[in-house]
Image 1: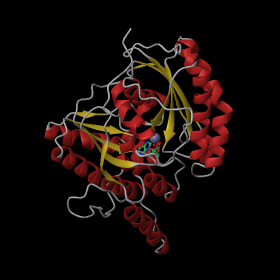
Image 2 (image 1 turned 90 degrees about the horizontal axis):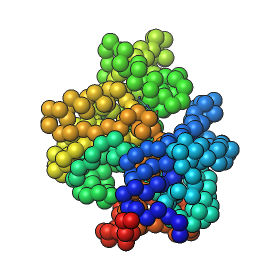
Image 3 (image 1 turned 180 degrees about the horizontal axis):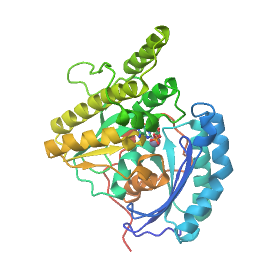
Length: 355
Ligand code: KG4
Ligand code: ZN
């Protein structure tokens, strides 16, 4: 095996194809981004108003080889220098995941280096490790197009989900509301901009669920927005789009931030980590900053380019497994329902000697 076995300075080529971004990155030592190439399919999917799985797979196939070659050359290394290949194993669209997995697996076989099947949400959380020093125990608020979760990490690489959405993910709710308000896909940034410019907010419900619950539900709120749109249409009134956007955003932000801060306090988190595509939301970031400052709770947020899907974050999460020699066999399968808790690192610390 020609893997570089230095535990701290390993070079991981990471591949991410779980949804509508084809991405490859080279990460040194789990922290340093040597390259992070992201090819977005948004323009293709926009005409359909959302991601079409079959189209996504085809687009990944078209560009994956080029993106991998670009990631290696931009990193200023050669393929033979790589220590391991990381691929997103799940969750995600099965056909899209497969493209990345097959490419990564072939490369790992050809180079005779280990393969590391990686969890997409672990990637979103560990995007923070590329720019910040994570301290444990900490709590992650994961807000993306497919996920809304509160994840407690008592120690490095060990995940415990304390709350999750029971219906729509927050990004999904943003996209559906935006679509009803006639904004193109992905709608999150449009709602964010409209909300910031609005003079007042439409009154919309907050979904707290049972007392003490850290779960979320956004489908009732989404339905309330759709009902308000229909009512104003029936009455022949002009729709106050900014007010609806602001009302929706305020409801989402209040529930997310209040629950996150409460959970962080209850579970003794030393830091709060915000991550996922919706972490780009300006309203959410600034409200969390205010609340965390008041609570003296350090808040970690990756830069925008590391919030949306990218392969660098997959390399950062794969590093957890690399340092513990927890590799994946070449029978790795795409797993759209991969459990984050089960993906946690096993205790055993490394068999790989530092050179
Ligand atoms: O994490 P991500 O890139 O993909 C998934 O893994 O799902 O998240 C994409 C989601 C989309 O739903 C998009 O509308 C949302 O993130 N998003 C935003 C903003 N920017 C992206 N939502 C609200 N405000 C934003 N500024
Ligand atoms: Zn994602």
